[in-house]
Image 1 (tube, rainbow, N blue to C red):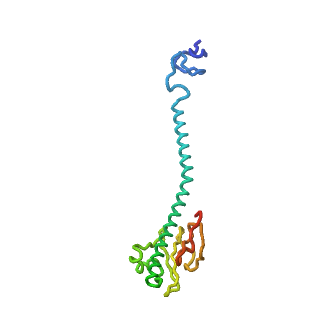
Image 2 (cartoon, helix red, strand yellow):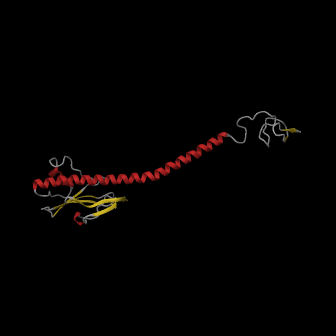
Image 3 (cartoon, rainbow, N blue to C red):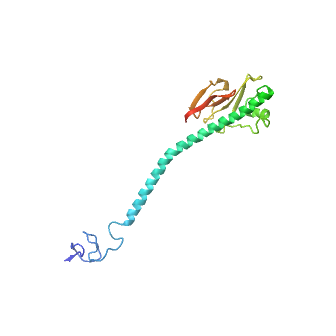
Length: 196
């Protein structure tokens, strides 16, 4: 009969083989690294995997919060740029009207370039923040008394055929809504929290 030198458990033979009861070599020598049932390597691998999953989850949560805010900020900056460009055109247009005593006739912002550049504005903005051409109208045709400059907004589609159809002092919270500037003030413009 043979017994484990560590715990006294009965074994078939004394050797470096681990004891079924205590896991130590039955001959009483020290354990050989890497031969015991619980390895440190497996624990390290599991720890790295769990840590990686936690990091991926945190990055996912931060991205879910940051990306919509970033997209909203980009849309808002395009709105503000469009509004600033429309004011630039209107300021040059008003200066022209003061000098010439008439509103220039035309059906697009490109038609204004010969009348306004370079005397009233160095470069005339022609597209809005989304890359859509700005729209210009004056009425009645031939002897213009009123004018309007418009941006189609994020959807790049105008809501009405003519800029005369827009109601005055319309506030919107949609990025897709048109922005209209007419005779020294915005008729339709963004206000408050914006949404798609």
